[in-house]
Image (cartoon, rainbow over all chains, first blue to last red; front, side):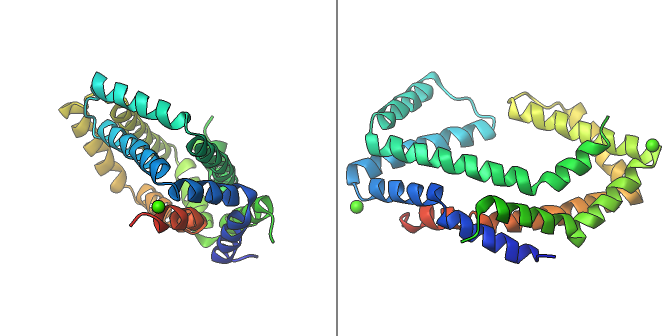
Length: 116
Length: 116
Ligand SMILES: [Ca+2]
Ligand SMILES: [Ca+2]
């Protein structure tokens, strides 16, 4: 019977060595090495975090803010290296979601079994 | 180099066999086998889900609803088997959070490294 912490570390190593992570790393480092792309990506991230925080705190988001966010998204989508990075982030998210579904299966089964 | 899906399945097996999961399973089944406890626990769960949904949708939560939720929590906390179940859920959450921290370390390192 494998130890949980050993299994988790083995999985971490497998993720680190995966194409998905290695491609993301390369795309991220490419963006970070370019001052203009870096600034553009950070603006995008900050705008997203700001809106998320407002939403979580139940604060109203103004038309102006929505318009600003829309423009920032449009700008980064037109930047080849950033849109490549966002694509790689999406790929890794899919991988992590699959893993998450696998390891929470025991809980799913327990809480699902006696629902009916 | 271990395969991701194999490693995830090994981790799932380790979680399933852990004391934390087995204790939770026992506590859950004990509550579900008792009609009164089962109903009480389900009321508690439904109240929580309802409030969470309202909060996520940015709907206002009334004083009355807060008071009702407070009473439901008080009631389940006084029920030995349910409070035991909630304790076991908390233990498993700690375990899952630790695992989650381990497997997202590559991402943490990547996105943290160039922040400064
Ligand atoms: Ca630079
Ligand atoms: Ca029954």
